[in-house]
Amino acid sequence: MIYFSTNKSSIPVSIKKATLEGLAPDGGLYIPSEIPHFSDEELLLLEGATFNNIAFAIAKKFIGGEMPLDLLNDMIEGCYPFETPIVELNKQTFVEELFCGPTLAFKDYGARFLARLTGFFAAEEEKLITVLVATSGDTGSAVAYGFQGIPNTRVVLLYPSGKVSRLQEQQLTTAGGNVHALEVKGDFDDCQRMVKQAFIDHDLNEQLTLTSANSINISRLIPQSFYYAWASLQIKEKYGYNDPLFSVPSGNYGNLTAGVMAKRMGFPIGRFIAASNANNSVTRYLDDGRYEPRPTVTTRSTAMDVGNPSNFARLKYFYGNDFTSMGKDITGTAVSDEETLTTIRLVYDQFGYIMDPHTAVAYRALERHRTDSHSNNAGIVLSTAHPAKFLEVLQDALDKEIEIPSRLLNVLEKKKIATVINPDYSELASFLNGL
Ligand SMILES: *Cc1c(COP(=O)(O)O)cnc(C)c1O
Image 1 (cartoon, helix red, strand yellow):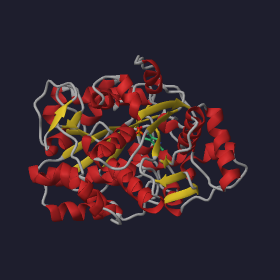
Image 2 (cartoon, protein in one colour):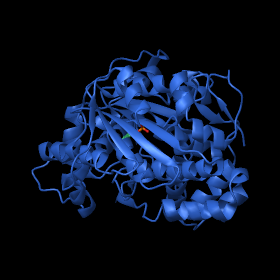
Image 3 (spheres, helix red, strand yellow):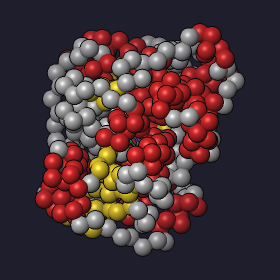
Image 4 (spheres, helix red, strand yellow):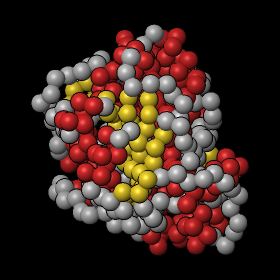
């Protein structure tokens, strides 16, 4: 399998190069030259398979030639020692809980795979890789934990000061060792812009081998297709549904892009609902084909506060730049903060189930789609974070104490270590040069 850039003006590369580079030299995002397809016979063989069996079957098609298969299999076992539960709210509505990893958010799926793959390729090349990552909260913690202690790698993460929850900040700033945290006095788009600038800074790139762990890295996206495949097969086996909807709480649209890849691989998936908050540039594009990114707005579902989503380039590419064709697979819906809070309350009253605000956005979007389309198709809501990660919001929505898992409580006791910088590229450059 080879990988080429969405901007089409750099040469195609192997998965090793795409992983270690992150962003293509022409500024585009790497995509596989073709999406591998699972035949009906292959899908039949995956019936009853475990999550890791399915993950291995997919990874083999994308990475196979570049890594011995027994190592790839061990790597996957090491990535996902935790469960991926699918909870039934009612006979049509399911929640796929993607928060059972160490940082209690779905980004563990992508980050743990990326970290191990990067470590493997870096060792092969005898290089020290510096992973640079902009985070609105969950990415940074997943990357910090994913790469912590992985030989041949170190991590520098940039997060917007005051715009992540206290628990998230503790996760970002306490990993230590090969992980460094930068607290940027700006917003997430500032962090993302500075990271992009570092990648095109020739002097810096002569000194360091930089790579990205944002969802612009294709090796973070590939593993995110695993849980779509898993849920679609589980729902088919247990309930006989062939084309469930997936409602996806979206920020940078990496998660949704991975879903589109899983559908194209041939897994039994119907439509997608792109659920956004007030940062709705993609949902507006799906309405009229005009893409007009706006500055980021702060909401109660902070991990989705992205004004100009990076994976939109991949989505557009997959649909030949045609919004009507994209609209055949994806419905966009924006959900307000007020609706998010009411939804958390309603879902708790109706099912006794506690959702985090991002999951609530996706749940509300699914309900709205059902009303608008007068249908009641099976729907899977992707639950991207454990509610305890967003206690401030949960306290406003519910009059109830939330139980905090012990692995979160432990992190609260640790000492925060971060370097504060202005949203100014030269400050990032001098930090990196001084490493
Ligand atoms: C990152 C994140 C999202 C958005 O995912 P994208 O892949 O960026 O669209 C949604 N919910 C939570 C909890 C997140 O951490």
